[in-house]
Amino acid sequence: MFKKFDEKDDIIGTQQLKSSAQKGIRAKIQEQYPMLENYMNDILPKKENFKLVKCKDHVELIADAEGNVMFIKPRDIPYIPSLRLLHKYPFMMPHQQVDKGAIKFVLNGSQIMCPGLTSPGAKMTDNIPKNTDIGIENLHHLNDGLWKVPIVS
Image (tube, rainbow, N blue to C red):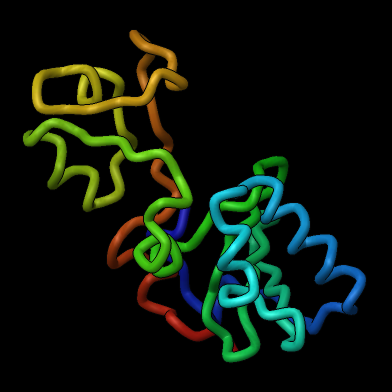
């Protein structure tokens, strides 16, 4: 999704949100990621305004007051944490482990196929359907366009 993301070409606009809209977004994120309840004030503090960054292809980015992207919101998909946020709070999502042969492809942004999750050396939670083609859709990976734009102005 963000392989060729460029701040100048892909960002349509940035806006400060009203406090009521911020409360709604915080509540949705907290409902979606209950493990973050104790850390929500660190991630998106109540006293600071955060930004809504609108991008092409109906994608919205939630950035803190300093411009660090915290969450990604594609159309019709729940909020997704940015990779930087996920590195700070790795417990917020279930852990998956691919087999050794899939690592270099996943780091380059490939989709994660079920055989890579079910083979020896891999670990998978029960909530992913087995024997399907794509087990996990890779939306944001290390060194993609969004990773290279750490601060959104």
